[in-house]
Amino acid sequence: MFMKRTHTCGELRLADSGKEVVLNGWVKRRRDHGGLIFIDVRDRYGLTQVVFTPEASAATHASAEKLRAEYVIAVKGAVRKRPEGTENPKMETGGVEVVASSLEILNEARTPPFPIEDSVGVEEELRLRYRYLDLRRPKMYNALEVRHRVILAARRFLSGRGFIEVETPILSKSTPEGARDYLVPSRVSPGEFFALPQSPQLLKQLLMIGGLDKYFQIAKCFRDEDLRADRQPEFTQIDIEMSFVDEEDIYGLVEGLMASMFRDGIGREVKTPFPRLSYAEAFERYGTDKPDTRFGVELHDISKIAARSRFAPFMNAVEAGGVVRAISVPGWGSLSRKQLDGLVDFVRERGGGGLSWMKVREGVAASGVAKHFVGEDLGKIVSSLSSRDGDLILICAGKKSDVYDSLAALRSRAGAELDLAKKGVFAFLWVVDFPLFSFDEEEERYESEHHPFTGMRTEDIELLEKEPLKVRSLSYDLVLNGVEVASGSVRIHRGDVQKKVFQLLQLSETDIRERFGFFIDALQYGAPPHAGIAPGLDRIVMMMLGESSIRDVIAFPKTQRASCPMTGSPSPVSPAQLKELHIRTVD
Image (tube, rainbow, N blue to C red):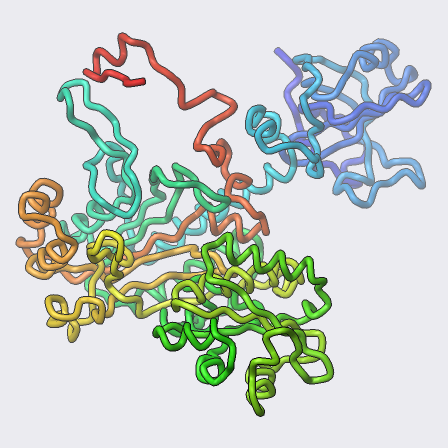
C-alpha cells in the first residue's frame, strides 16, 4: 500500500509548520542545486515545493535524483517556513516547503509531447490527441471546476423554485429541427433508425402535457452541422420548460438563474433585469440579432442622402429597393491603402456587394467616394455618425440582408482589433419579437425562424394563411457579449394551429403523421399553455472564463472536423457489425 496523502498540494500554509505530512501528485519540475534537490509537486488543487537533503534522509535524497517531469509520487516530510528571501508570493503555498523524509515513485512517465503549462504554445490538435495530459494544466482544472459549480448552481436554483429534473431518451425519433441528425441503426428493426436528439424539444413539451408543470434537465444534445469555435457535434444545455406561463415569466426566471450561476461560478454579480431589443431594432443598429453591446459603432441609415449622390452603386442600390448603411470606426482613419483594400476583400469574401470608405480629417470626410456627394450631404453623414477626426466611415449598399451582414462583420472585426469592448463586462441582452417565418428564395418555401413548435402572438394567428411573413413569434434569444447563449419560446399548444404551421412548411399530411403524429395526438388531450428555454452550458462557461472556444471548457471535445484525435473516432467498424445492422458501405 502506498503512502496516502494527508493534505493536497494546494493546502499547506505557514500555520502548518512543524507538521509531518504526506503529499501525492505529479512532479511538475525538478531542480538540482548541488546537495539540495527541489521539486514542485502538483495536483488539481495546486503546487507545493518539496526539498530533499542528505541530512534529512540520504536514501530519499538518492531516490529523488531519479525523478523527472510527470512522475507520480508519494512523499512524506515536515512542513517548514521557507528561508528568508526564497518565498514565492505567486503561489498560495509559497510561504512553506516540505523537507522530505520518505519518497515512493508510484509511476514513472515518458517525456510529455508538450510542457504541462498554461502558457504552452502548441497546436490544438496535439493537445486534443493527448487530452489526458492537457487536462493536467491548472487552466483546465479551473475550467472544469467552474463548469461543475455552474451546474450545481443551476440545479439548486431551479430545484428551489419547484422544478424537477427528468431525463429524456438519447435514442429518439428523427424530426426536422434545423440541422442534420446523427442516426443510429436499429439491429432488431432492419432498415430503421433512431436519431440522437438535437434537443429534447418535443419530449419536454410532452412532459408539460403530462402535467409535470416545471421541468429541467442538464441535457446532452447532438447536431451534425458545420462546426466553429462555439459549436460542437455534442453539447450540453440546461433545458427548461414550464406550464401556465408567458414570456415574462421566462425572462424573470432566466435572469435569476444567470445571476446565480455567475455568482457561484466565478464570484461575479450580474445586474438584472437585462435590457431588451426587438429583432428589427437589433439589425437596424448592429446588423445582427446577436449584437455585442459593450461598444458602439452602430449602423446608420444614409439611404436618402446616398440616393442624392452621383455615385452609381449607391443610387442603383436605393432604386432597386436596397439600402445604404454606414458605420464610423474610431482610429481606423490611419489605415494604409493596403489595409483598406484588405477590408474591401474581407467584405467580398463574405459575399457582400462591395465596400466604400471615407477618412475623417479636420471634421471633413475625404476619399474618392466623397466627391460624389453634393452640397451639405457629406457633412450630414459625418454629423449623423458623430464621426471624429481619425475615424473611418465604412459604407455598404445593396440588399438589406447583405448590407447588415457585411457591416456587422466589419463592426465585430473592428471591436476585436481595436479592443473596443470593455474587459470584464458581461453585457446580457434579450432579443425579442422575432418573425415566425423566413422565406427561402432558392427553395421557394417558408422556413421556421426558430423551430416549428414556436408560438405566435394570438392576434397574428389569422395572418398565418394570408401573410405568414408578418406573423410575430413569441420567441426570444439571450445574447451575451455578442454570443447567443440561450434560445426559447412560448410553444404552440393547440393542435389546429400546429397543423397549420406544418402545412405552411410544406409538410404533407403523410409527413405530419409519420414524423409528428404522436405529438399532434398529444395536443388533443388537454395541452396547457407552456414555454421554455435552453441556455447553452458550454457557451456560458466559455464566456465566463473569457475563452474563445468551447473546446477549452469541455473535458473531451471534438475538433472542427468533428473527430477525436485521442480515440481516433469516428472509425470504421468490422464487416460483421455492419452485417448485423443490415448496412452496406458504398465507396
